[in-house]
Image (cartoon, rainbow, N blue to C red; front, side, top):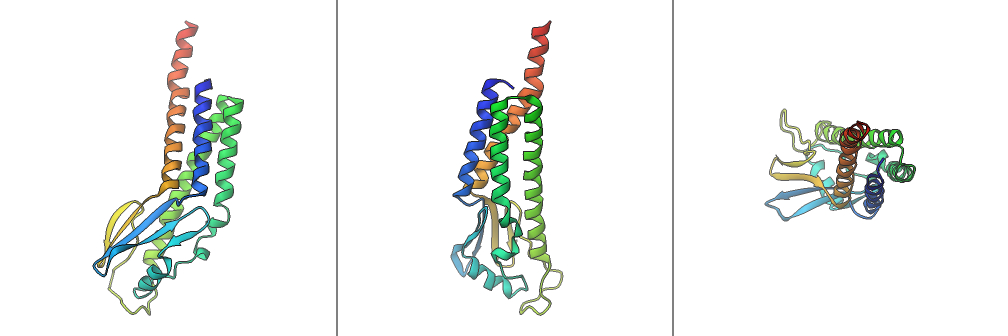
Length: 195
């Protein structure tokens, strides 16, 4: 690995420390009766925002009560992020391309699994409804969007990365660019130099 590649990886890893202090994801609900909007913030190890109000509203249409217990991931997500950061810093110090490739693949696999896990939770939350709910609409499901906005009855639900999520996305983008450089551009330069 080139020296500046290792510096970028180290900076990308150190930046991810921010994700421990700000929310990763934000879900907002807007409706005529809530013009100021309702917010659910998802952190590495907790929930914040209007969790109780959203839970009460969702109860009427048969959705489960939102609680920290619904997210077993909170018990180990911090450990996984710490492991990614530490492994990335070790990779940046050692500067071996094979180690960087292993770290890069692991980082993106963890990110992909995390996104799929969040989508699966949303799917279950919006589809697994209590048949005894006060309000029932045939064939109506309430899965929030993974990213973007969606109309759910009279609520406009929006889901986007928050500060911590953007930091991880930017760190991942930097890692991808370094990977592309090291695997393709840097390899071509080495061949040219050999000739």
